[in-house]
Image (tube, rainbow, N blue to C red; front, side, top):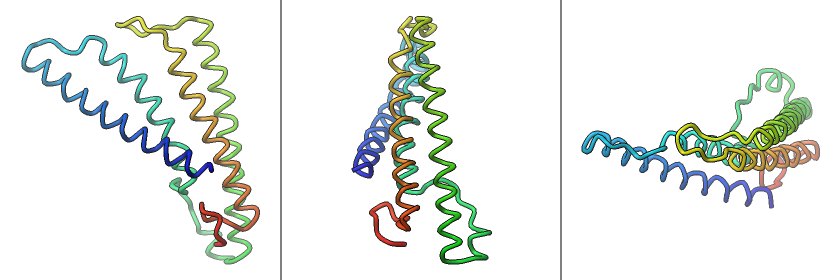
Amino acid sequence: MIDRIARALAVGAAAALLALALATMVDILMRWLFKAPIRGFLDIAALATAVIIAACFPALIVNRGNITIRLLGSLGRGRFARVLDSFGALVTAGFFSLMTWQYVRYAAEMTRAGETTAILRWVTWPWWWLVTGFIAITTIAAWVMFARDARGRSDPRGEPS
């Protein structure tokens, strides 16, 4: 289930990134041709980038796209390597749990403060709550991956490694 959610978020993020790239190109062309950029584009791009990056995190975790150093695991093989993988998954899940907590605090502060973008004067809190939601989904994905590792199943599809 988390695999499908992560994949759907990544596909959505890729589409949003493509749209942002095209909008950037249009903004540049408008600056060059008409000396008239898209008003507030930097406001939108900054917030959209945060959302897009956060939406990619679950797929990163589920697909094991994070950096892994296997020096110690290669010395021990078998069970020792699986224990180290489980420990790494536990640390990752703990990290994203703390990150979720901090983003909840940050988004709540943005909500209370009524923070707005510089040019368009859009409130930023909805964007930051969206980022927080994606980080929370990443946390769930990280705990699922830890559970799979702890059961000796490191493949995202649940197949024995």
